[in-house]
Image (cartoon, rainbow, N blue to C red; front, side, top):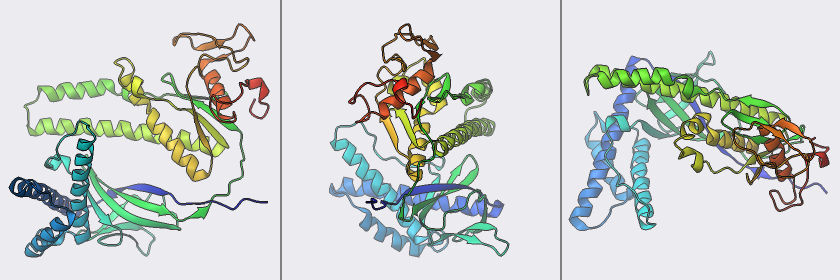
Length: 398
């Protein structure tokens, strides 16, 4: 008897670059400044009332208060969309709630602070209320924002038809404007027939990934390739007058270079993760805890440059979207065990070739680890609870 299809709904975010003209950029900056002013005033109001009465006010009280202020200022706050202003107040309310929750749990937290212009770069809209996508007669797509107009958008990928757009987030970063649309994919049955073999993925600093099939994916090392330029710009900024316009310009150049490095990393990881998901029917990865690498004075920079955490998240949500199982197994001894006979072959990190004296298997160290990861994932139950098996016992993947 055929099992009924499982209905799945997913929430995704589509991010697009905006191309506003000078007038539209000024209007967006003006609206963002109004949101910042409301945020800071609402924070000051909470502080003052707590000092006077010893009680905290919530979102509902502040919403009524700023609704009246908005009506009294037609040239400033009245130009801001009402639901967008409410989202800014909810943002502060979530910050307060999170602060007290973490404080009660004994964590070390900082009190919500006032936002300077450089620290407040996002405003949110309820989609369809002051912010909406529009299509011209020539099929060009624009983003309409209330009191700004229709803004050109780099619509590099279309939004699926059977989706619901929940809200839009407009962000300013390094002089550029972006819009992030939060969408919910409609509940559709996932019916996917496996078309490929399972694969194990081992990540590393020398090569960003090694597959159990023997494929090695190189690590471009984006940050390391730009370190000389970064150091030169940072030395240049340190010699300039503190707070001067020239120093501010240099800091902008540094920020844009960091953004470029981030974009290169994400683009590369998107491509290789999408390729793995399209090609294989099951993906096995290590359940790595990256704390030991990110806190090491010798490995931290290389670990962040490789983006292991980003790569893992991309594989997870792409596999879920495609209906492909992704299994995380324990990383214990995956590099030391032999995939041919299952015996432990101790070797240092500097040894890059696996050579087993018991069965004579010789292959790349990372490929051997990827094979062990896949074998652990195919055990029943997955991980180290099943019976020990070797690569030779698995003709479906060998």
